[in-house]
Length: 391
Image 1 (cartoon, rainbow, N blue to C red):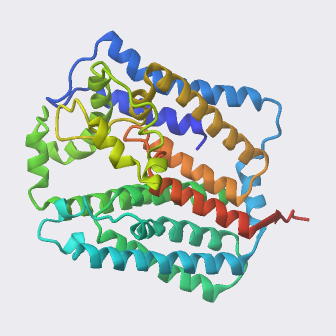
Image 2: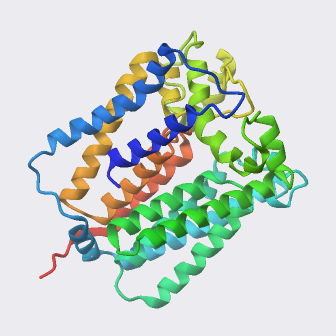
Image 3: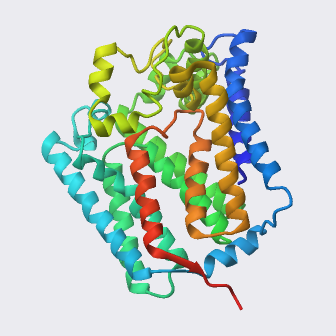
């Protein structure tokens, strides 16, 4: 679960699958396109190497030692419990208000696939993104809090309600986020993660993702995706169309667009969250006629995480920003290994999610993502005290 392994494994799979060219939407890349595609991941890995070099000689605790130290960390159980209750109540408020404004819940709409896309209202609608906060902080409570079995039962119910109601919105991204964060938290704080439990996580994740996909687009999804994606393998393997296309078309879109982009946006997409808060996002977009997904070759409309920084700042963006990102994430990882705390492990779990889905898009500029991280940061500042060392 080190950053180099998570990131390196992810991008090895992406480049390996992209090179198979199983879809008619994929093309053979030129040397220049390969250079662009490799520049961002290479810069990020160089940042990780720099963090490693800085940490040479530091005393790093083994994983078992980290688990013991986190287990004996002292937190304010009572305060954490009521913060979770607050997050849950405001989640329900945001959920209910959004339903009243929109007049429907996506899963029950006549066209669920279309209904889910615009199911958001600015402001109080942001409370819907409290679902990951409820889940992650409840897990933290179970990992660190002593006894309090009745409160733990209450939190289990809140987590169940949060996830169930969120499934009705037919959104997968945040569900993948909490799955990866939960996996990372359990790995660094317990002995629950074994090969069998990892397989269980994968199977459960695939089931949830494909169940939502089926609800979103109906029974013919497999045939439609196989046909529209111009797949070159036999139809008997059509079930692999969606995961394959989601893995390869993001980098394909990046490579296709990067050689055609003739103007940059100088921070508009990198600092999307700040523009959203100030109300400048849409006026700027309209004034300059910005298109969020230019130069697409298919219905797959996402790019890799590095597209945001290339579109804003060009070669400097995909050289310098990933380098700084790798240095930062590497520094957090080694800080966690030197002095394990539940807050560092939790924030590193967020970074595992970012690295694991870096082939898909960059969540770093999204208002909801910054909001979740800020909420977690304030919570840990309020409830964490010191580590109680084991005698």
